[in-house]
Length: 191
Image (cartoon, rainbow, N blue to C red):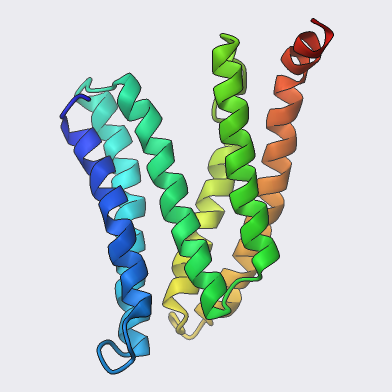
């Protein structure tokens, strides 16, 4: 495993997951509900920022690695999954929305792994729809975690709308990736 700044940032993101979850399990006497929302939002925002930063630094410092390419999306999926589970527990997100988003991540990760084994991983590389989905998803999760008004706008209401849009984009991107992989899937099932 290469020890470089991008990989260390990715490990930092993974290590923050139990800290993030613990914040919401502390008693209200230990940490007020307002502070739980604030601290949880800040941790998730730091994770989202380090996700962008590790990719940028890996390219800028020429420190890309196969291990980093594997670990980075795993860290992202773990953090998003942890946040969605916390939001479902708090009653801020419907379980079906969390299931759609988490289920898609698992399905597309499995599809990418299978396509890589076939030597066709480039055929389902990250697309613009995937990036747009991720942007909506991250903003929605941040707003839902904060759960308090931002500049007189209900973060809860805006976050709920954005998470529904993210869920629709999630389904759209899954169909898109499956369509890209369909020629390989058809070819393999005929063999």
